[in-house]
Picture 1 (tube, rainbow, N blue to C red):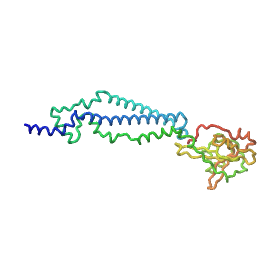
Picture 2: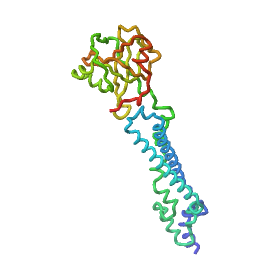
Picture 3: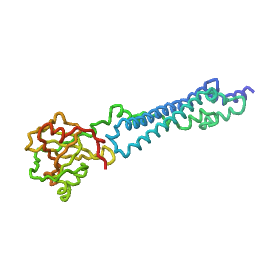
Picture 4: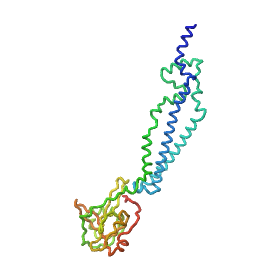
Length: 331
C-alpha cells in the first residue's frame, strides 16, 4: 500500500505548482488582463489623436488657412470629413470606456478564480495532460486572452501615434502659413517696353489666366495689346521703375500651384518713382496698358505699363492696396 500510495503521489507532484495554493489563478489572472489594459490604453490614445486631427480640420476651415493649401471646391468636403472623424472618435471613446467599465466590475475581475480547479476529482489528470500538451482553452477567460495573440498583433506601437500626430504638430507650429506661397520674381533687368503702342481703351474683367493664355498666341496678343486692364497680385521688387506682380493658380492644392507673373513698368517719361519698400509683399490692384515682351527663349510674358503724372496719382489710380478674395486663382 505504501508503494502504491507513493506511486500515486509522484505523478501529482508536477501538477502541484499549478494548484491554487501556489498562485496559479493569480498568475493567469494577471497575465490575462495586462494585454487588455494595454489595448485599452492604445485605443484611448488613438481616439485622442483622431479627434485632434478632426479638430484641426475644423479649425483650418474656420480659420481661413485652407486657402493656403487647398482649392476652395474641396473646403466643404474637408469640413464634413473632419466632423465625421470627430463623431467616430467620440463613438469609439464611448465604446472603449464601456469596455473598461465592464472589465473593472468585481464579477469580471474574479472570472479566473471563480472557475475553480478542484483537485478532488478526475480533473487533476486532465489538467496535467493539457498542461503538458499545450493550452487548455477551458481554463477561463484569462487563458483565452493570453492565447489569442493580442500581445503580438495589437501591441501598442509608438510609431502609429507619431504618424497620426504629424498633422496636429504641424498645426501647433502654425503650419501651413503664408510662406507656402513664396514669391518668385521675374528677372526684369534686360526687358524693355515699347513706347509706340497705341491706346485701345479700357477692358474690364480681364484676369491673369486670360493674359497668360493670350501671351502664347499671336492673335490674342494683337487683341489685348494696347488695352488698359487691372490685375490683382503681390508686389515683388526693389526697383524705382519696375516690379513683378505675382499671383498663383491652383488646380487642386498648393503643391501644384503655378505662378502667373506680370512685369509692371512705370513709363520712362513719368517722373514718378515706386515706393517699393512700403509696397513689397503687399497685395495691390494695378492698372496699366497691356504689352507682351519677348524673352530669350522665344516666349512672351505679360507686361503692364503705368503712366502716372505724379506720386499721388500713382497710389490713387494706378496702384492701390487691396485684399484678394483668395490667395490663389482656381481653374
